[in-house]
Length: 129
Image 1: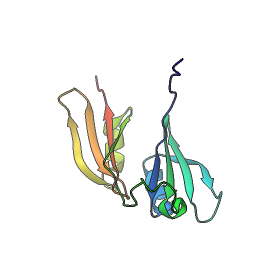
Image 2: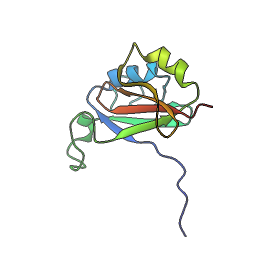
Image 3: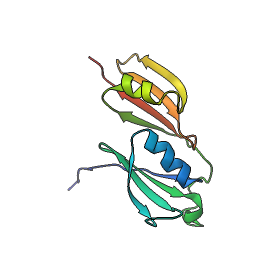
Image 4: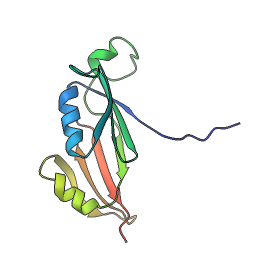
């Protein structure tokens, strides 16, 4: 029997956990778990609405999972759907590196893309009426 998947929470590897947490807090994410609970973090889970990200330091990874590239950024894009994209864009546009401005796509979504402090790309999208 095939089970239906219920959620996805990518584990993103970063060099500076404190800077990453601060960056995602300005996007509206809250830290819901961390290891350790205080001090210099090795891992943290952050959430905004139904969107979850886990962050882990490259240092804490050690020699495990040699297949994981130890460089910032990646060959992927995180596509995040939200409501109120224009207000959200206006709130963060001067605090982040916008790489594609607010635009209407050929498939009808209103989107914009940013690079986070680790060079990962986040695209925010809304199907506006």
